[in-house]
Length: 327
Ligand SMILES: COc1ccc(CN)cc1O
Image (cartoon, rainbow, N blue to C red; front, top):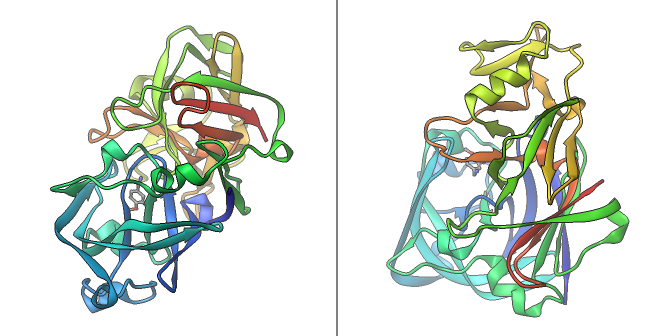
């Protein structure tokens, strides 16, 4: 059995939300290949923090005795609580004994997120934060039902896309799929590009990072980012806006990763114009920004992933790998 779930972008493609049924309640979760916990808003939160969200009714649920979770994300946000076992359905696929992590506390960043009802982690289960015993991700729990141990993402700019589980949909991409090995030793979908390029300016330095659907932007070392925006007239690193901004009518340079020898994976300049900083200024915020102190790895987030159909392959032909094709 395979499955497909439709995922829809929030404003400015800030995050993509996908319907997930837990018990008989449907939650809209942020699928995150950069973490490995499935957590939801719950009745253990302060009442005002539950408002506007689907809420997990822990009083009707099967507690995992003695288990708890606490997670800190790269953007400094955090969440925590206790753990239940429940039936979870995504795109027609069912995990009967899925660890569902009920949020009892949320940091301010999540309290401000009026739309997401939680996260569904799709990184490797070694990254799960439940104690005393790590729990398996939804993908690991349904993997044996799938034709192939793969998740394929088709995230789009300002339009609904899909998560395919168990199969690769040839109708969703053009040209070849180029595969690159993944190092899953830190629990992420980590890969290395042999080189990268800003437009025609190729830099023969390797770049290692993670494919992360749960991060909005592309986050790179600050010197690399500064070199990118040197090509953009009027660009400046603005403490007021928290990163590089430029005139909204700027023509932005494409960003290319060279993988698997000589295959180019290119993010068109248009996708690197992330969004206007506000309604009165003609400044736009860049889709490539410097990784913050908390994050010690480069992150190829949604701005990068939107240009590609990406196959997260857990081992259909040996080790884990990522496949890229233009969409
Ligand atoms: C505060 O919001 C979030 C923080 C972290 C993640 C995971 N990368 C997703 C979010 O929506």
